[in-house]
Image (cartoon, rainbow, N blue to C red):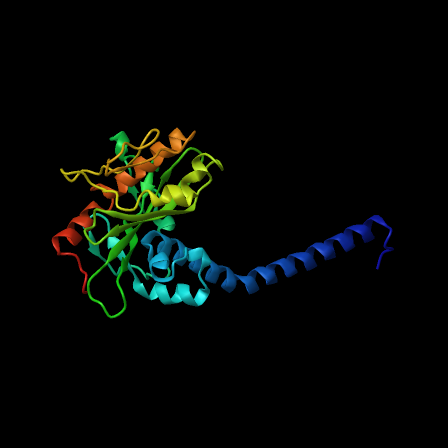
Length: 271
């Protein structure tokens, strides 16, 4: 063993410390992984419940204020399904418990987004072929009360990811939430403001011709406009981005075929 104060001794001790620390960090990461995954699922459940309004309807609270037991109880209302976005049909091609749409939204596995129509451009290059949706119905009931769609697209600084819940007519918005974004706090970050999100309830996703029409207005939304919510002050690009990707996911390139089947009654509600 070389002397501790020698160059070789110092390097040896430093190397041993690095190995020990890396082993401790690796062990901690492995030990904490199940808890991290559980917290990830819990956060997803909270965002879906906030979009549906179930937590306020049943308990008079936002999902973030509910206990884990209450969240698990309400989550029994939520049934995840996988949908082929081209056909609008349900599919069992993947294991729904392990399916992560992000892994398939690329050049190798996904579908190219042309972006030829500016108002239907989410700012992304590719999207997944199969997406996960969430049917909302009270345990023991057959009829679907809502459907929750994952939506995402570019803002100013980031890709915003969230959930849009639609009522049983599949064209009236129940709620909109965002669980991931990197927009500027106090500006584009106001997509998380509860008062702004509350404006979406009751807004129409489509106009009388069946075209996607939901819009974040530039400034205060006109009184009585059934498609518009107030713009985000000082965040024009983020506001435009939200409009664009909501319309994209409502279009025939997004969930349009699926929603058409649900509206016509040919969706697989009871399958």
